[in-house]
Image 1 (tube, rainbow, N blue to C red):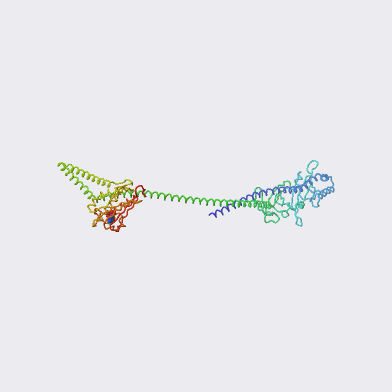
Image 2: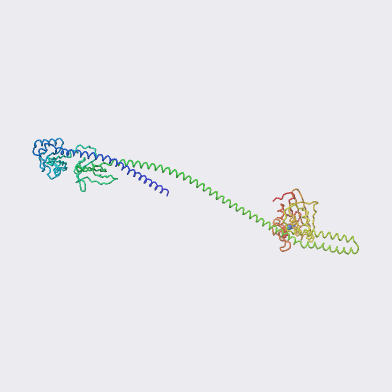
Length: 585
Ligand code: ADP
């Protein structure tokens, strides 16, 4: 495609240069033709002047001799014939005229320089005009016995008598061959032809007596025109130019027309040279232009490649940026999703914790109601007894009963408070909590269950508080769960004992709950949600207690572990972060 366009461009350029060179050639050709035409016109004028000058000498001779007294005298019948003959002979010799003769008014020959004489009849040109008082001119061609032809110009002048009337005429004839003898050899071809188209005079011998015009013997020539110039083409003529500029000129005095043929070879040469020069210059210019364009194109190409590379780079950067922002958006969405999931999880966990608590409460409700019922019954009997004591006037006993009632009511109040607090949905933040109180509150709720299960509790609370990081109710839930599980495990055991210890050593607070049950069946699955070895559907087994405890302890920054004790039974350890230390997230 590009290649084809290049070739087309080159072809167009070559055509252009060719056109330009052609124009230069045309212009130069016309110019050169104009120049040689100028020179030719001068040559033609010179040649015509030369011919008419020579010829008109003879006419003047006729005019002068017509005034010669000796000749006039003879015509008036008084002259001497011998003298007259001497005159015509002398003049003929002096001027090189062919004949000089004198005729009378009737055209009869009187004297002549040659023996023949009497060439023309009285009614024939040029005599007829001379005998009528005017100058007569005529030419003729005569072929000699040896075959050479003579081209003769004849001039006649009237001889006037005393009355002013023509009484005779002087006739002078001249051969034009003498003119041609000393023509300059290198002159351009020139010829003079008469009204009949016959060439009478020429400096080219083969043109002499040729006849111009249709069917004439003049050399064949094709005529063309360049501007106002007439060009003759004669390629087959050896002695004439192949291409000639033809010029013509009228010579009315002699009744001739003069033609000149100038070789145009030099003009052509000049034109061709100038055109070639112009073409070469055009080509050089074109090549320079082409090289410059090539360079320009190469530069443009390099620029285009650079631009393309930059564009590609920009495109890649843009694509990369797009990818990154998409990834970024994805990440942001993921983060939000995760946050939402986390929130949902927290909500679910909170609900689970609550469910766990309610389960524990359900498990212990029988025990607790018993625990509340028992002091209530006791209060009732103390109150009845007190009434009785007061009736009997035993005031001291009645007061003691009241004190017991008050104690029992306080104990009930504490249980109910603990229950309320435990059942409450806790969303208070993590704070410093006294672990001893937590354990006491949990045991308060669990105690009825332990009592009904025949479990003895070994728990000696420390003298002062043991502060840890956590949520009070949630920690209570954990302790209650451990104690409740221990009691459940020992249902079939002979010895039912739970020992609780609370250690505060250095960076840890550690609570352990040990029982005398059969131990853990599958320690590795114990913390899984819904893992339970207790009868399904019974009040006891949901399999959530330990997994909820695990989550709660972890949320306080602590850990919960369960193992079988070498001495029998299971032992659960809860490690917590002491108060004053930050909970690691
Ligand atoms: P649940 O008490 O509803 O079964 P938990 O998550 O509290 O659910 O306990 C899961 C299981 O772990 C129990 O079913 C039991 O098999 C085992 N387990 C828990 N505590 C003890 C323990 N003190 N001794 C033996 N096994 C225990």
